[in-house]
Length: 393
Image (cartoon, rainbow, N blue to C red; front, side, top):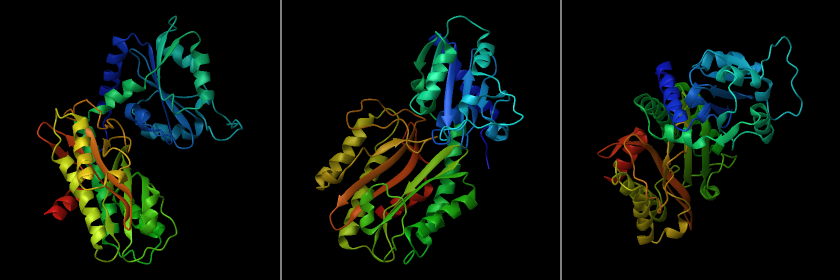
């Protein structure tokens, strides 16, 4: 199995520093935690558990990773950067008490900032992760920085993550290979009589066996429960003829792959179910065959919406049919029909086409991942792409 090499992180920090230099940013701080891990992992590979973390980047010295003691050894295992320092501010955020660690030598955020900047005067600082961190931590960072000019740096990280490098494409392909194995295990299983939880467990075990580092989510709903839109698997018993809405996402080296295919449990679909599935798959296929570098993103959304409208399905269309992929299950771009930006070579994109609350049928989606090329789309999700092509043939 491949890993993201340190040279990739060095390149990412170099690209970040180029942006810092353009707007005279002295320090760039990247926050992450167990849930909002993507930006911190992008620049450091570190993914905390229980605790939080921050990478502090200056103009020239190696970045400094700030962690809390419980995750110190995990950080040493994962981090692309050797300079790891312990600070109290990134400890657990969900217990009211301050944990009393024994035999631990903490540094301070003030010392780290001074070291990174050489005790420079008034600083310009960008912070990525304001929307994810607690207000207590945010206020503490402001206190540490004193009179520094503090700006939101999220757009900088999002712009860097938009186009996928060759290394990232390989990580995504591996993630989707694992995801496909998990998903197919459920498609091949006899799930009649199982609870939704038991059925979802089949896919999760197969994906873990194949090398998934994390199950990002299992959305599993059957029958009338498909109308929950993003229902977690429950204790409902699956019956023959139930519509199954199963979305499955796994994580490998930080990168997330998600698959979804509409199907009926245990027997041939009814005419209404078959028509519903056909319209989902056909509308997605129209979009898949329309994208290449240079195409206006909103135009693809319009094509799919027009297909729904032409077939009397527009009132069951809940949200736009595509979004970006990468270190999050859904990331930029997330176009709607008014988006004028063009698709660019190297952009990761998931089709995520859905219909909700169709009478006598329920709800479902079809989802698969791609990379935009000059001439079309490079498939990431072989399983779903093969199912779509076979279905429409």
